[in-house]
Length: 78
Image (tube, rainbow, N blue to C red; front, top):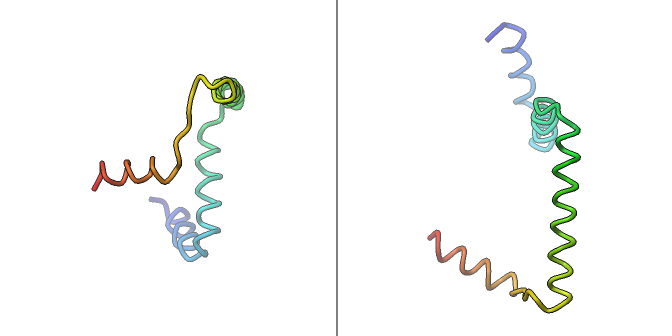
């Protein structure tokens, strides 16, 4: 690690946790660099969400209470 990176790392680690989280998010986003791909993914998710909502409203799919689902997940991984 360079001296500058060492210094920056020490300074960043002294920030409050919320500030570190925001910085971490910005750094991760900066590594992606493909906004067009993000747009495609977002559009795909939007279409999928709309499809699922239509299925629920039409009665083709049924939801379950969140507590039931979470309870099953907790039981599976404990």
